[in-house]
Length: 498
Image 1 (cartoon, rainbow, N blue to C red):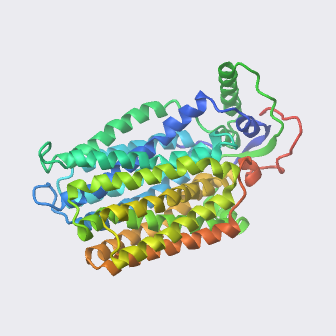
Image 2: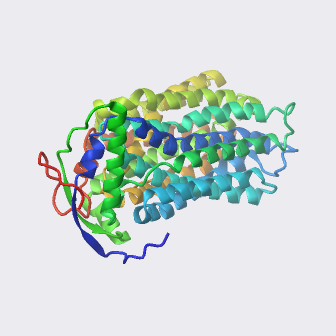
């Protein structure tokens, strides 16, 4: 993976119309291949995380094969998974910006699958905790590599809805994980120490299929022309254009924009930090607010939903999957039904409204829960509505940080805000929340709801003032590449990469 060129050496100056040519493509089979190859891994992530939440009660029971408590699963194991994701995002995010999207989204999936397989073989708590960390390490790298690749390959007028749809597909896996856990935890079918292992094993099998599909997803042409591989970018885009013209049976219009780039082999951490915090400080605040809000809500509260059901409503551990499937369906519906509006109504309106609505609704849920007005079914219904809006908002956090910073910093920006926001809400959250739910005191759990609601509302207010109107705009217009020789000229004949 080593690059023989000097880290900061310039490799030439090119004028290219590759971004404009990618953005003017109509939707095609090629784009569906990207969505399937890159997006379906979130289904696996949802499958696994939901499975762990549902099997927490079973793992703590005698005969499970592991001497752990439910609080350790929802607390320590959840926090280690998130800590691994933060570390993996930073490590693989840096490699992604330096060595390309394709190499890293293959490597990160391999790490993820290996660690998941090892989790299925757990024989002691330390082993389980170790491979939960390493599983998170792989998935954190996936977030950085995949979100940057998606935004750079998808036309600007579809970018919002596609990004939200892909990130939201996590919840399709969550539905599968919920239903799968019901089958796996049925001791009349599988022994108590076998069923939960099979759920991880199935995730590995599905991941291997995705790995085969992903081999055909190309490198980002935007990354190629900036890193001295302009001819490769030109060849790739030309091939895609011919495929699309053959599919649509019509000629594509000529691209009307070009950009001149000083090609470089790599960008240092110092340059990235100065760009993110010096050049775009308001965008940095926006990214941090969005990630902290959604990270606490999802990594803290939803990790403990099974514990709430069993502790306060005495739902059997083998039945929590039914309730998880319902809230997962609400999560899935949000990005699918609202995603288009992020490209039409606009980013600022939709991001702020989804965060604020989910926060306000969660305040209402906390009030009803504290009064004792809810049962397992009505609490699940309330969460389903809250998460319908929260899921679209959370997905838009990844969309936002992947499109509002320059090309050379994109993967690291995703990694940084994911790591920092998730560390704030996703590591401390599960640890604190597991203690609150374990106490069995209604007021403690209601307090956790209130904290999550407050952070979501705060993020919504920040986005109301600071969100960038990025809908239907080229990435190079939203934030000019650091290597750009001049602002992207409009309405002029576009020169080919040279």
